[in-house]
Image (tube, rainbow, N blue to C red; front, side):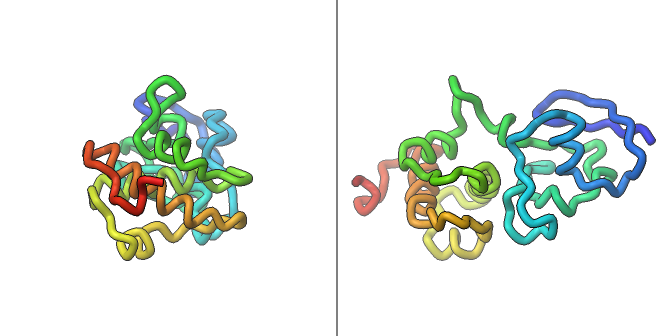
Length: 163
């Protein structure tokens, strides 16, 4: 079966045996974009989070057939070293990663949240960023999310974040 996908603004035509193959494996194995990670395979941990038409999606449980004709963005398409997305910049500034494995999924989930809620409260973050980090860098991630919101809106950081 042939599918047409648009990933990070690039069109791809892929041949796939099973249209129910998780989007994650197409992204990683066929398109060679390794930033999206496999974590649990059950859509529970969020390491595989990508955007499909701007929505955060757990790609390990999202059949590739549903992605056809939609805009897919992976961590590689969010920003780059020379022009990082504000979320990526905030992650750098707050020195968020410890092992770093889950961080692409967290950044993708955060970018999707900030498109909907430009200045999230801690409660907004708790309700929307439900990914799992084995290293427990949640405190630094929360600071980075607030910093990213400030960077995106060009507002000053809350006083508690100026450390």
